[in-house]
Amino acid sequence: MSAAAENPPPASLTPRLEQILQSLPDRAFSARLRAVYLAAAQAISRLSDLDLVKYETPVVDASPDLSLWEEMAPVIRDTVMDVNALLNVIREQFPGTPQPAAPRKGPADVPAILQEGMASLAQSITQLGEAMRNPSVVSDRWQLLAEIQRFRSDYREQMSQLVFESASTFGEVSRAQVVPGYEAEVKAAVTVRAITSDLSRIVTARLNKVRDAKPEEVLWNAQQLQTELDAFGRTTAYRNLRAQDKRHIVEARAEIGALALESAPEPGRLLTVTEGLEELVRSLSAVNQRQLLILHDREVWAACGVRLERALAQSTKDPVASAKALAEAAASAQSLYGRDPTMDAFLRKARKLKLATLTGPELLSTIESFQSQLAQLDVM
Image (cartoon, rainbow, N blue to C red; front, side, top):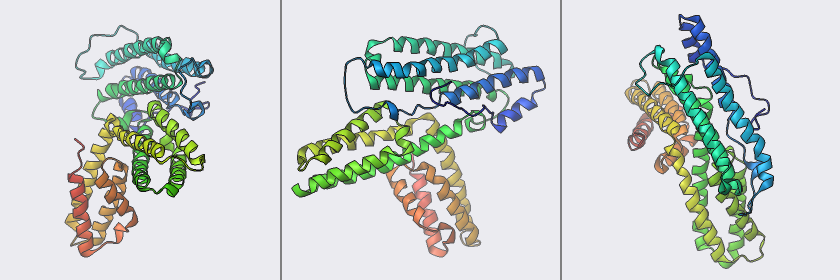
């Protein structure tokens, strides 16, 4: 049983994937392909992101961490077993030798796509074994966690690509339509981006206050920053951070916590820690470079643009319908929160407005302002 999920839900396929399988005239081929897709869905579910909270420690120690290795050994074992379970199904259902890479045009290429994906996954399993024998990895708690997290993420990505590429040979599809767990992974990434963006604003504001703090205000600012980081530590975004980023957050929380317990913390120490934290939190915006967020943002951006065009066209002849389209666009655009500070400010303001009730000049100006924000958003 995977350590990431003791009772994973039964694997299921997306409606579009089911539709594709049911439309195939060769029922035997469809059944074989269904077995592979179900195995991929199960593996993707079981390889979900690890909750690293129970493995965290603020202590940086270069000595071998055998206790962590003992804890993580079952996770590594189950990771290998989960990948091999999919490889075994592909070998059973589509035996053969991987062919040289070539453009994939149709259903006849499905076996080659699956065998190629199988070969890539098998190679990655070998790389995992090599990494786990690297002394610099197994002797460092955070590097070990980071490597395990990275490999599990890579496996999910490779499995998702295998499903998408093979399903694409039957017609036009999107990843969201066919890849098991894709929408949940996008939602998790959107949540991380939104919450870390708010954390960045909070820490920047706190840094400004620390810089201006009088001696008697230093302790209060340290305590406030500790409270703010503790609140972040209870969010889903914190649980989904990469190990490398989480390590620095954990260390900063420990240092700030120690300062908050002092009767008169030294202002320079608090300033140095807060500046480092602010730089770290700003770097978390790199989540925007994840391919699944780039694809998601382009789709949302385009859909919002269409809704705003409709809202603008109806603004004079049917203001009720126009306001409704505006509200729908703003609700959809909330999943872009964290991509751009100017857009974020607009979206925060939009949350407080009853957009569906706007009329007249206010309706028109809000639509135009929203369109301007979208036009300046770099999603290409």
